[in-house]
Every structure is written in structure tokens, then in C-alpha cells.
Length: 375
Image (tube, rainbow, N blue to C red; front, side):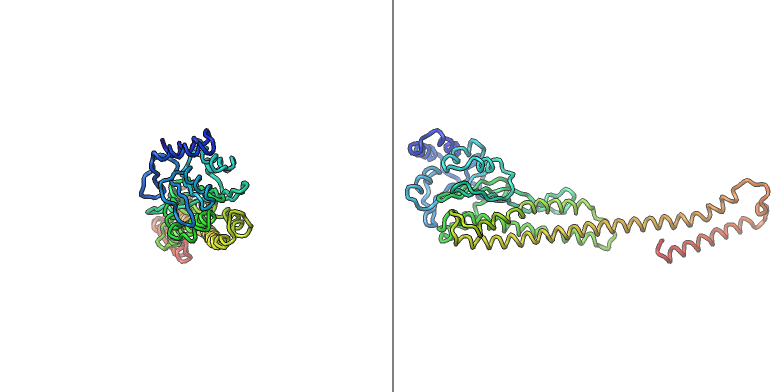
């Protein structure tokens, strides 16, 4: 039976006896940390569950329920439970165990939420949009540049629950980094919330730096002197991907401001200073995105202006050649009329003279248009 299946049994057992029975069932299957990118999923939404005391990992061998029971009995430390795309049934037991609000549970399971911070009693519920730069050999009108996901975080006095949606945003390396700094982890669940926020915002900066290279390539192609015309779909696609990034970054400003300035019971005042630093990094990402948006608008307008200029040049060339061709057309049209009394019709040198006049007139027009840049 999977660990997630064991957790669902919490709803049908009593608090004390039920917890111990679920713990015995869960021990039959060893816990595997699926958050590490080198490990393969085993079909369970439970990625990892670790109890921490004074910033140090409690010795392994306990499952979710055992870890919670141990922390609550000692009234010291906290539990960090990580999940990946849980279903309603898989999350039901966890919601019951940690007394999570139904609205927050629904948001965590359904995903597709905008970044936000909500308080339900003594529990904080935060939503972060994760982003990842999609590598591509050449930017086209259909290239995917930004891939998004979500991380939902429940923070209580003695627990942190992370729910991840998407193909990226693994928290395994982040957990290892935090465990290497026990003095920071000892500050409680709020330290984990800060680390996740900092990790997400740092990814924003990585993606914006990568998008800078794509924008530079498009800008270079637009103003290239080789005469080749860039596909406007590339610019438009880059704007669409930038909009996707903007939807992830911009709404996060207000939640970070609340975490950095407003008193929250589960967030230690010392941790709020760290959130201010994350807010500064987010501001940099927002400024870069705004600058990219304006730059892409300018590039698109410049491209459209170039297309208009090219069309005007083509129209001038067509008009100039039409004027040159109009001379022989007019002369031949006059002498093509079948009148009986046209004196030049029976003149011996008439043909040569007309050809000469046409040639001289066409040459004068051609040189005039050429001198004025129409041809």
C-alpha cells in the first residue's frame, strides 16, 4: 500500500489510535525522496517527509504520521512534507491530519492559481508560480520559451507542506541546501517559506537573463543590413512568452510585501528581513520584464516601419517603370489608330524617327528616376 494511501486512512481512524495504526502500515514501504531529479517517481504524490528539531533532521525511520506525532508530543521542531500533484483522495488524509482549510485544499489540488498569500486561522497558505527557461536552437513563431508551474505552501506552527505542480521546480536541492545550514532551518517553518520564495524569485532572474539573449538576437535580425526580413511571428511569440512570465512575477509583489512588513504569528520578525531581500530581487525581475516589454514593442514597431518603407520603395519602382513604359505605349497607341489621313504614315524616315524619340524619352525618364532614387 502506498504512503499516500496510508494517509487517506486518517479520516477513518481516531486521532490517537488511528495515527499509530497508519504509522505501522506506512512502515511497510520505505520512503523515497522523489524530489531529487535523478530519482524516478513511484506513482505516489508523497515526495518526502522529514521532521526537524533545532535545525537538524530527526533520524530516519518515521513516516508522516509518526513525524507529526513526535513533533507535537515534544512541542519542538516541525515537519516538512512535500507532495507532487496530489489528487483529492490522496490529499484528504493530509488535510485532516493538519487541519487545513477546505478552500486552501481545493486551491492546492486544482492548481492554476495566481500568486497570493492567505491566512486561515493559524495557517498561512502561499502560492508561487515557478518558471523555467525552455532551451531552443532557434526562436520561431511557435517556440516555447517559458514553462510555468506552481508551488503551494502551507505553513503552521509545527509543519510546512509543499505541493508542487509542473515538470520542474524540484525542491530536493533546496532541502539539501537548507539542511546544510541548520542555524537557518532552526528558525522554524517560516525559514522554509523564505527559502522557497527566494528560490522561486532567483529562477525569475535566471529566466529573464536567458530571455535577454533571445531579445538581442531578434533585435539584431531586425536591424541587420543583409536585406533579409524577419518573421514578425518571432517577435509576437516572444511577447506572448514574456506575458506568461509577467503573470508569474508581477502578482507576487503584494504577498512578499505582506510577509516582509505585516506582523504574522507564524513568521518570526527576524525572518521578515529576509523577505525584504527577496522582495528587492523580485523588483529587479519586474523592472527587467517591463524593460523587455517596451523594447519588444519598439522592435515590433521598427519592423513594421521597415516593412512599410520597403513597400513604399517597391511602389516607387513600380510607378517609375510604369512611367517609362507609358511613353512607347502612348506613341504606339497614337500610330496604331487606323486613320487614312496621317501624314507620317507614308514618310520614309518615320519609323526610325519614332523609335529614336521613344528611346530618348525612355532614357531621359530612366535617368531621372535613377537620379532621384526611384530605380
